Image 1: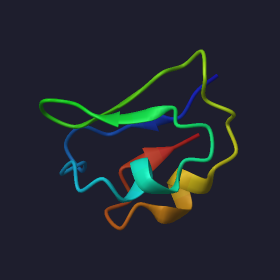
Image 2 (image 1 turned 180 degrees about the horizontal axis):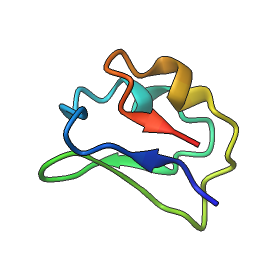
Image 3 (image 1 turned 120 degrees about the vertical axis):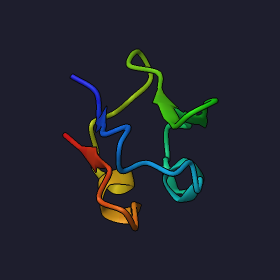
Image 4 (image 1 turned 60 degrees about the vertical axis):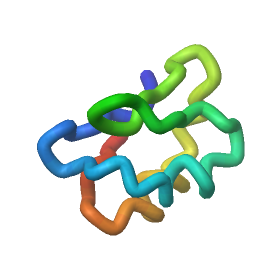
Length: 56
C-alpha cells in the first residue's frame, strides 16, 4: 500500500517530493503523484506535508 494523497488539500508545493527518500513522489498537473511500485510506506512525506494532504 502506498501513500494516499488528498487532492483537495494538496497544492503541489513539493515539500513531500523533496523529502521522499525513495523518490516515489513527483509533482503532477493538479497535485503530487505517487509511484506505488517505488513507495516504501515510510511516512516521511506524511510528516513533511504542511497541508496534511498525505496519509498512509
